[in-house]
Length: 120
Image (tube, rainbow, N blue to C red; front, side, top):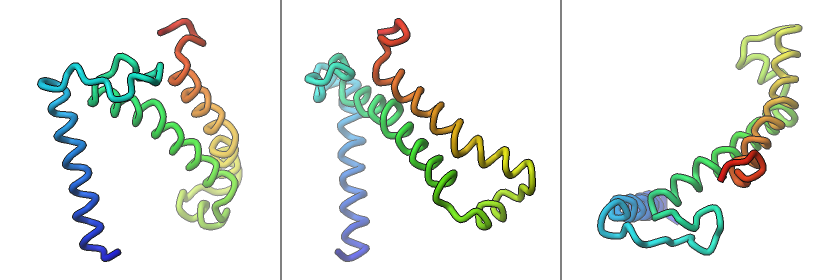
């Protein structure tokens, strides 16, 4: 595909999603597009997209980023980019490789299954 066509296509899709979100706060407030999914059953278009992004897409992205930086990224490149050396870099790398993925996974699980902590 040509870059200009792709830009127009993505821009058009984003525009239509924005219009749907705006209309869901007024005219389309009774429409529940993801009502068959328990996490989204009482959500209008705006709230469904908000929850999809904040509870699912952002934690997955953070988890994959932490895994990539902590385990796959070139150590010298990461050291150069962070400006950390020695013990501080080792501590930082440990936190990124082990603690961050665990914490983000917990955030994801508790966001998708709020009844595990007594909410919902």
